[in-house]
Image (cartoon, rainbow, N blue to C red; front, top):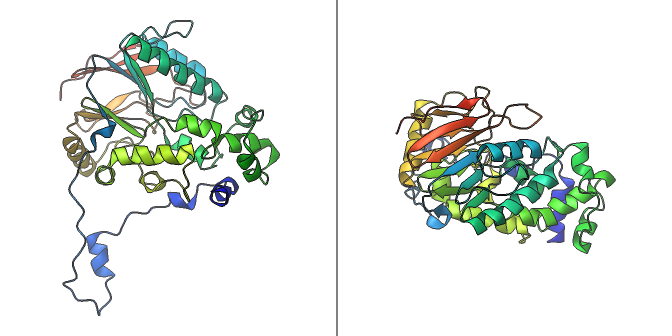
Length: 344
């Protein structure tokens, strides 16, 4: 395990594992077939979409979704107050409310430990009150466990400099720049912070609402969304592995894709989204990852809601959250609330 992790520590650019790993299309396979290969050689057919119910939770009365917060605990608190989840002292008052934060708690800001602690505390307080807090892992959580620190602020390194890593992580970080060793030890698989992140899923579904940082594609459903959650959790917690699991290592992973969140999705992408939701018996998908300068909005006839509005100081947007009550969806912001979206 030590040898495998050392490679992660020394790779401070996006790992090669994040390169595109999709198989060639059937047409490409035919074009590349050697002349001597019989034309009748069978092509492997992918299995049909098959939902994995381990990531699916029952419907609830009220859900509030919060997008990327990027190291700004004040922005997170403001969004939680807007959702009536916490009071001015930061205590849970949401009763049976369910809050979903769609990933990217880390990087670009200086309040990462406070965000991690706040979400962990509220997770316990909400559970005791009959509600829930679900924080997802986005690409920035995964990048940090991969020792990709390109978006970490100087304070982000300083915040983790006083830790006490175990002997293995001390050895693994010996060749890391001194100012980065504490963070590397904390975030490497099996490190203190990585273990805390390991409880956060990549994808969850609550009733008909599918929550993910980037987007769920058909290939992800075939791979298995519950399987992806389990493999990512085990890797972060320190299970022996050469690299991040295949389900999140590709640039087409659900933490990276922008198929539904960038601009106006094409008809083809909206059609894939419809097939994914049908396979999951879902109504809509809620995604972050791509800043929406016009505010929270929907696309594909309301089948996807894009909720990353750039809450952090880095982007400077005003707090805004998405509230879901059954079939009713509305945007809640400091400057007013949008009317409920039409039922889809």
